[in-house]
Image 1 (cartoon, rainbow, N blue to C red):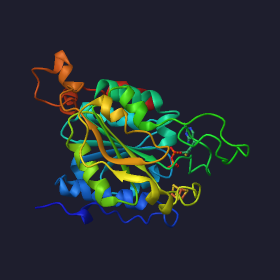
Image 2 (image 1 turned 180 degrees about the horizontal axis):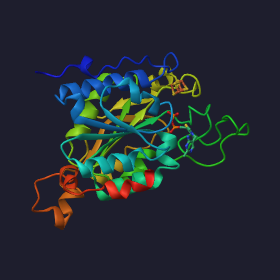
Image 3 (image 1 turned 135 degrees about the horizontal axis):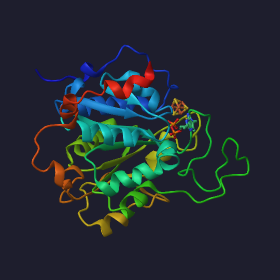
Image 4 (image 1 turned 180 degrees about the vertical axis):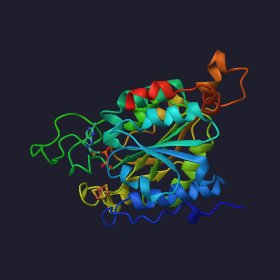
Amino acid sequence: MAVSISDYNSKVVPTWCAGCGNFTIHTALKKALSELNIKPNEAFIAFDIGCNGNGMDKIKVNGFKGLHGRSIPLAIGSHLANRRLTVLADIGDGGTLHEGLDHLIHAIRSNYDITILIHNNENFALTTGQATATTDKGKKMYGLPGGRPEGEINIGKLVLNENASFFARGYSADPLQLSEIIKAGINHKGCSVIEILQICPTYNKAQSPQWFAQRLEKLENPLDSIEEARKVLDMSEKIKTGIIYQNQSVPIFYDRLENRKERDTELVDEVKQYDISKLLDYLD
Ligand SMILES: Cc1ncc(C[n+]2csc(CCOP(=O)(O)OP(=O)(O)O)c2C)c(N)n1
Ligand code: SF4
């Protein structure tokens, strides 16, 4: 039976602020999963800490909420243990670019077959709007009344400098485009990094829907040259959305492991032959 978007509905009522981009990001995610006919029990999403991570109980999939910045290694572990699952990490710009930055870099470099959704609202929202690495230089933020002193990180430039095999940029107020991007990211065999420009009307009033409307431009087709892709990442005037770069010829980490080459079983099943109860004795 075909999977429908409502199969992903949970009974938990969202507590996000009115107008928060997380609502439409979730709709786009559910739409993408259902259109790919992935059943809720075939998907695993590692959630982070933050307003984004508070989405965990609002979508009915296998999930795990990790420490702040650690949803990416959790997603990697789940993928390596059980490749039958469609695995995503769902994380904010704060979690990704601060405590989680090393995990992002290694996920890209190893090209694990996971999809990373970065909710970029350009602030640490759950903790009331402090500056993150994507906040514009000079912008006044909670705890920084004199403005942010350093220059900002451009997620696309960071990701493509590490030779990511897939980078896309979506927008929370365009869930139709975003769901197509998420589908492409899931279908991509490798580490797909999707930056989602997320409206946060509470702590990022400057980047309103009107502000985005004046700047966003859709890229019709992905660029297959990484050098060309790097040229369209600048966000100072116009901001490109869409699948910006995809390289399908980079092998994924798992397929490069010599000791897994002859195996068609999953680690999650193989481990069942071992009695690990003694390792858990200390819990008594
Ligand atoms: C290990 C750890 N460090 C810091 C915190 C405090 N903390 C909780 S939510 C949060 C902000 C999250 O910001 P971001 O990842 O951008 O997500 P958003 O809330 O904006 O969606 C921080 C710093 C924490 N809970 N755990
Ligand atoms: S603070 Fe911002 S990100 Fe958090 S729920 Fe409110 S609008 Fe959404």
